[in-house]
Image (cartoon, rainbow, N blue to C red):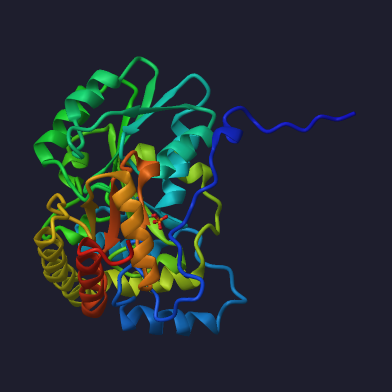
Length: 362
Ligand SMILES: *Cc1c(COP(=O)(O)O)cnc(C)c1O
C-alpha cells in the first residue's frame, strides 16, 4: 500500500475564491468584484498582442529584455534589477519559495491579500497575521510581530481590500526596523492609481532588504494576460531568477505589457477617470449612510452597520445585476468591496444602494 501525502501546509490552503462574474437569471450584469479596469487594456496593447498571435509557434523570450527595458525607461529603474512573472502572484510565490521554508514565519496584515498566506503555506512556512490600526497597516504592530524566525513581511501599499496606504516614511521605518535576514515586500498592485507615487522605489534603492511586486492586471487592464513584475536589489532578483521557469511568461503577454507600459497617456486617462468616479461613488454612498475610508485604489470598501446588512445589500445588488465582493474572508464581515466601474456602473451601484437603504429587497 502506498500512501501519497502532500507536503505539510498544503492542505491548510483554502481554495482561492475568485470574484464572481454571473448571477443566475439576471441579465445586464456588471462585474465589480475583481478590481478590473472598466475601460479595458490600451488599444496599443491589444494590437501588439494580435500581431504576436500569428507567431505563436515560437517560444517567447526567456530573458524578457524588451519588457524589462520598457519598464526601466518608463519608471526610471535599472532593467537588470527587474524580473517578470505570470502575474505578480508568481513573483509572490517565488519570494516565498526562495526565502521561506519550514520553521520560518511570513508576516502580513489582518486585511492583507490572500496570496501571501497561500504562498507561505505552499512553501511550508508559517503564515503570521498582524493586526491593523482601523484598516490601515500598522508598522509598530508589524515590527512587534517579528521574531528571529521572520523571513518575509508583505504589505500591499495601497492595500487591498482596505484601499488605504501608509507614507514613505512609515515604509522606511518598517524596512529599517526588521530583524536581520527578513525581507520586506511592497506589493504595488495599485501603485499606478496614486499620482506621482514611486511604489517604494526610493526606499528600495537605499536598502538591501526591500523588494516590490507590480502588476499589469489592474490599471493596465491585462488581468487575463497574466503578467507582473518585481524590482529589488540585484542579488535578490538573481535568486528569484533561479526558480523562474525559462518561459514563464507568454509572448502575447510580454508584447501587451510592453505596449501598455509605454502608453503613459492611456494610464493617465485611466487614473483620472478612476479618481473622478471613485470620489463620486464614495460621496453617493456616504449620502445614504454607507461610510468608506478615502481610497487610494480603484475600489471602495463600503462599510455597513452589521454583517447581516452587508450580506443583505450584496444580495440586493446581485438581484440588480451588480456583482461586488464580500470580504468576510479578509476579516471585514461588515463591509463590501466595490470596484470603481464605468460611469453607468457607478450610477447603478449608487442607485441600488440608495434603494436598498430605503427598504428595497427587504
Ligand atoms: C490584484 C492584486 C494583485 C495582482 O495579482 P496578479 O497576479 O498580478 O494578477 C497583487 N496584489 C494585490 C494586493 C492585488 O489586489
